[in-house]
Length: 425
Image 1 (cartoon, rainbow, N blue to C red):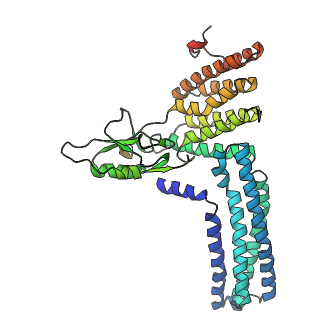
Image 2: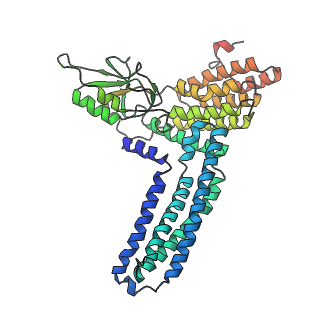
């Protein structure tokens, strides 16, 4: 199921999938209408003029192609805006927008439906029952297109805007964090010892996008070994960096073929949001860093991103919603937990560095890290305190006005236990 979820998520990012499905359904509806000619329905329904159906279909065919072309142009403009105003890494989320894909699918599907239906009507394909059903379906399709167009206009006005892009990135990151929080070891057992055994290397260069833990468990059970992962989703895989180690060979057994272990790692050219929560944090930090650049000079967006990061780490600190069975379902696959320090580095380093000279950003960052330190999670507290001290050091070096620096120091408000040694008076 996890593998299926990953594949379906990949298909959602392809613009041609939904239009193709809708086109096939549209063609099917044209031929399904013919089936009603052989039923008693033809004696019960009123007779519909062939000219009226043909006129309605002609209007739809003439307008849908224009609207579909216009929608594609608008979507391309929104995609370009998202890449330019936010970050190119957000492109896949904007492409996967449901409202835009549904609108494009509806327009293209209505166009194909009208063309095929006109051809059938012109060739006297229908009798009374089929023509009535075709008229009803045409009216429903026309109503659906109007509703979709009105809804899509409201959506396209926001698509590609900074706020909409941030919402999509935060949502995708939150979903990835929730899945990793509920399964911190990807349904495997926790890797506690230093990895040892026979190393398994990648055969291609790219980012680990997905790991099929169930396949690794099945292979390990078959060969009576253990698989210790060293590369999590988001890791840059190279032929000289082990993806995993295979340990637990019997002394009298020959080493098994480790090719299935490599095949369990889905490696691609780009990082994906689905199984890599750190990537979402990186993208949010990139958006904030771009907003803090001298060319953009938009500290408000950086402050907005800081607030979103607080929400995401608060989500991580909530109790897991997994089942009550504490026994790991894949006990022969050992998986390391994601590092909280690495997550904080991804999220806050860029903002602390590029916003050190802006007092409003520095103050907001100190308050956000203070909030995270008080959530009650020990790992989050340690990482937050470390980055509070680091951010204060950056601000101390970047702020030239003593009053601004005093404001940031007041916002930091370290307790005696939290104050880093480097900041001691």
